[in-house]
Structure formats: C-alpha cells, structure tokens
Length: 296
Image (cartoon, rainbow, N blue to C red; front, top):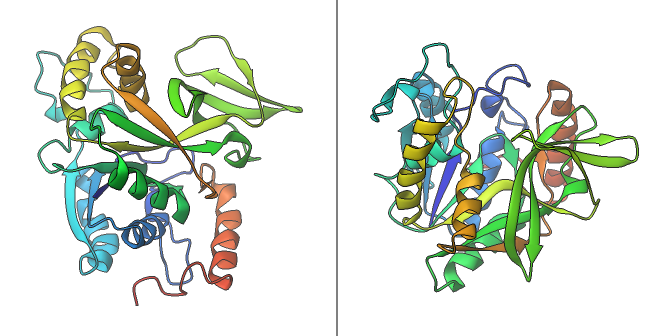
C-alpha cells in the first residue's frame, strides 16, 4: 500500500510552506505524524508530490528522517510539463489542481494507494480504516473516501475548503467542493463552482481529500484532464480530484464507499491555528498516542 502526499501547494492563507512548519516537540511536521500513522497501519511506500524547487527542502528535512522506515519517492507537479496542445498562461503560479497532482504519479504508483493533503492531520484511525478497506475490498473499481463530521473540521478563524458529501447506504452519491464556515448558528457552504450557498447540517459528512484509489484511476484522469485543458479557464480553474470521482460515479464507471472514522481531523489553515495544533499534539503525546520523538 502506498501513501501519496500532495504537497505542491504553497499554503497561501497560512503565509508560507506550512507543510514544513514544526508542530512537534522535536521539530516534527504535520506530514511526519501522517507518515507515522500510515506505517503503523501497514503502508510500505510514500510518494511526495511537490514543486521541483522544493525538492532539497523536503529531501533534507522529511526525507532523511523516514528513508530508513519506509520506501520514499518524489514526483514533481509543474504547469510547464503539460504536454497537450494548450498553453498555460505564464501568469498562473498555482498548480493545476489535485487531479493533475495525482496524474503526475502514474509512473511510480502501481498498487492500491491513499491520497492525503500534506497540511492536514487525519488521525491514526483514518489510516487504519483505509488499510482495512484495501485488504478487504475485492473490486478495484470501488474506491473509498474517509468521511469526517463537518462540525469537527472547522476553524474559528475563517472559511475552509471542504467536500460536502451526500451519502446513501454508505456509498458516496455526490460531493460538492465548497468554502465552509460558521455564520451565526449555522454552517454555510459556498460551492467552489459558484453555485448558490446552502446550509449544511451539523452532522453532515465531509471529505478531507483522503481517498483510497487503484491504478485504474489514472486512465480516468488522463481522459478528464484532456477535457479540462480544452474547456477550462487555465488562468484560474483547477482540476479537482473530487470532481473526477463524482463524474465517474455519475456515469457508473466506479463506486465509492464512505469510511466512517473515529479520528479527529486537525489542520493549520490560518497562522492563528498553529498554537491550537501544537497544544493538541502535546496532549496526544501525554496520552501516549505518539512518542515524544517519532523516529528515535
């Protein structure tokens, strides 16, 4: 089983490369805790999707800490590498989206894999339920997403991006990528697509971009990415992996289980979230969930 970590984004709202901001007592990053949990759950390879200019930073920090614990590979996501008959505007700095990021892994991932965001903390149980799904699932066209209660994923410091899920019989029916925030006593989601905002139930399930996939996903991504490049506004639009999944659920190419987890999601969307996260990790260490030094 492979863990694919999407780390090409610059974390603009946080104000820098939040993926390599120390949060643990020995300088550990959020990624370190995800990798630790993944190894305990049975994953044996990790692939980092990064910008090429950040390779040395990742290699000399995270990479050297884990290379004797798990197989490591690096993939570069670059707008300049798009080989289709299109021209990406030179003004565009942001990557082309999570779907493009995963597509960049097609030459190094040949086994069941789980994707996560580098700057999200998913909790140990999330990796355990994903591992259990891979071991028990017999249909490689049946994917999975780890589902979190929306009320447990918000920050008091502003809006955050979440995939609001419609679930039926433990299957994903629809996923709406949205900007979500507390407004008064309500949770309001504003779809990234520009569709009208809507009120979300406090018990709703959301995706934090932790999916279980199989290599056949790359075939769907190749086809959909070609369509995206021909129809999107390449200055600002993004090729989102949840949109790909929803489209192929709709056309009956795939199904997607929603995996319940008892894990607590944490993140650092804004700089003011950092102290809260450090306090959480400190408490988890005191509870014995994590050792003081992850890689000692």
